[in-house]
Image (cartoon, one colour):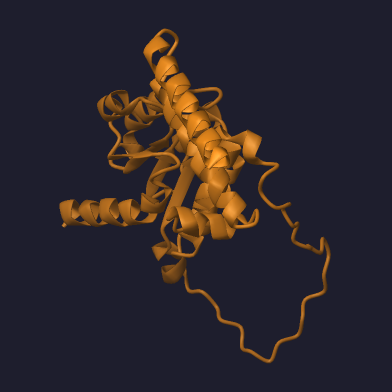
Length: 241
């Protein structure tokens, strides 16, 4: 009975302290973005803990389709959680290797098949995001050229290299994404090329004014890149038809 009474008194005291703290709370210095980010970090940390540090299992717990989306989120916004995840295992790669003899017949690709492959330029300075997008689209049969600098991307786009679609981040070195979109739309042979703005910056209005055909948030909408590309290219075919 005495032990129960002591626990009850401790609980009441704790509740009184919390009530006093809530009364003394002010909004001075409060940041909604930081509050949301702290909550996001806590959920990710709990998922990693419950998954034993496995990013793949944690991504499933959090509802991500691809574990690379979670990796990108940790690398860009929650670097303090890098020690929470299990160590990254490096894949063994042979710099030089002799080609293995295979009994399978070599499949040659005709010029028509090569020309029909969708070609995309992705301008992104975050290596993990660029790799994720390239791998995802490669699985869809698309070819992706990655560029990390806005000014370099503009030089490429002024050239004759064929691209069916362009994906651009806004936070770039050399030339910001919104400015890159504006300049690209002024190039005669790029005016009708669909452009997707894939960024974490709060610049949606500026992006639409610049002339983007779709705006996706990074990293939340990384899973929507493939379907958005398909939709934009189909719409372009309908306009041409």
